[in-house]
Image 1 (cartoon, rainbow, N blue to C red):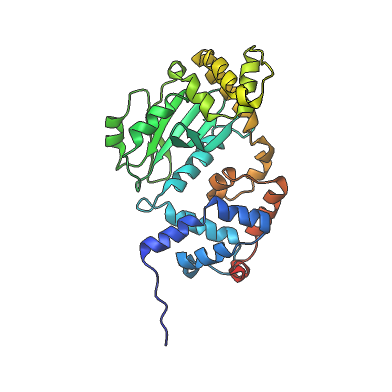
Image 2 (image 1 turned 120 degrees about the horizontal axis):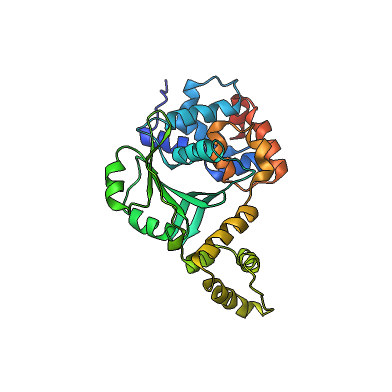
Length: 300
């Protein structure tokens, strides 16, 4: 008689975490199925704890509930807390835009929210290292007017010691609430026009310059980038920052999915917001969430 042996806990947690990957969500939304889902569902061992006749969304909620435990919390749990409690809780997709994995200099900002100003949230979960935090915050202070680090209790003391006083410190509590330990200071004067220019697209830079009354000369593509950069560096830090907030708030807007997000399970809000999908994909994704788990396991 063969006895099923469970994989090690770290392996199960890894599989559970990967259920919330943008690639898997994209497959479900675009194709209506995902062999990867079937494999990860089995590797996570969550199937032992859930009714296989229940809808697929229940398995994601079960996975999220496990990862929310203090000893298992990872970056995604923090991202979802920010998306659910700040972007969708305090703001609205009608008035705010969320950027995820947004490259600034040599770093990628975990989550940034544009809503008349710019606020970045660097995540340091219980399972993360603080080794790069000073370099990361140094870059973000040159792009965003508000800079925050959100972390767990194990890192609070070291985060305070490592960062300038104008950087906000937030705590994700054991009860999954976001508590402000130190409020971030609004400091657009430290913004670097060069850092903003290098982080955005050329079409966005052109719109910012036009909105600031800069006349754009027709030039070959080989010369245009240098011309735009020169003109952008002539803006004041306030003009560069405020122009960036206005333009990126439009070009990166997610207002079209405001109503759709109301139907997305809470556990999946952050990853859905982080995944580029067509409008028809969202409808397919919601339909997939109602498929019985036992049917989804056949995708493998």
